[in-house]
Image 1 (cartoon, rainbow, N blue to C red):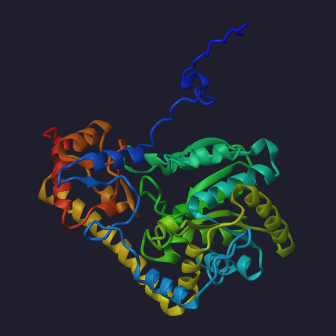
Image 2: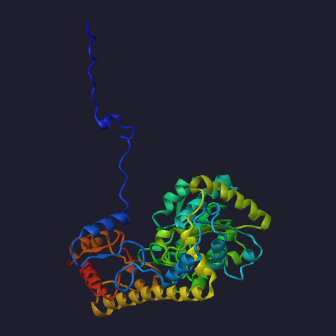
Image 3: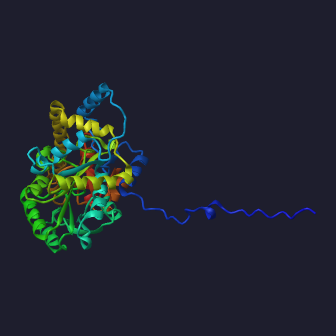
Length: 422
């Protein structure tokens, strides 16, 4: 007797997939701008969405000091062995000196726990995870971010296990700092809360407190017992001076704050793809630093084991070689000055040449790579569709994307958008 053949049941791949329930995530707003720009075939197109420096010809820029450091490393025939969990000691030592200053008392007393990280993002993530695990105030694992803040701050800290709240920062009416609102919100925050502070060149607004305002903020943080976590992604790149851009960090430390600090070398050394950064904490003494170091290693080890080596060697070579360091400082100043000159040019074009409606002084008073233009979502949409000018919907532009070849066209396009003539 021939056995009955069981029918073969056919199921679609979709019905069998373990991951069929996963919803599509929202598109990244900045990457979406880049994709739209790439798809545009107009020769006039301008991309002001991505936060990466471009030279006067709109091209990526590799710093001469970086090229020289790479030549030194090539000649040294260095190996490719794993770094320790907390990274290159030469790099972290010099990164701490750059941030805290050569005369820093905690640095001299070996009280700064520091680890190399995967750029600034990695520093924030390691810091968030460490704080979530070890911050002693269980009912105060709340971090306050400025409104607005870098878009990645919220998911980084939320995924680290912290509750994310906000404090007022940007005043849309003046396109400047809402200092009264900032102070009021920090004073109203629960004691022992964590507050995230942009050390310089606030992203996305380009609006920074003055040194006197920083001193007031420090006093409020101290009075409320808040814990300051600085994000310093643009040291040197904002004003052209590494010391000036570190004012807030160094003032807080001098006033006795035990800060946390995330550093990035993406912008100020142009090491975007090398992913070079550092996370550090100021502790009370060398013994406490050693304990903190040991726990930071426990955070890092299962996360990525140890950091990449090449970029850290480049940064360490520049920071530890006097001639290269001086050359790098001039290059950073040159990048900052080019952006400042673009601000001047844009302001003059809008205000003096074109007579564009509105007040445009914020273009000059803001600092760093980004500027909040004050353009509306409708105007930015029109600029993309009619003038081939791409930026985020909130009107943030990367000043580094402007140059002598495109700034007049950009100014004229903004003028038409503001007047509704595009």
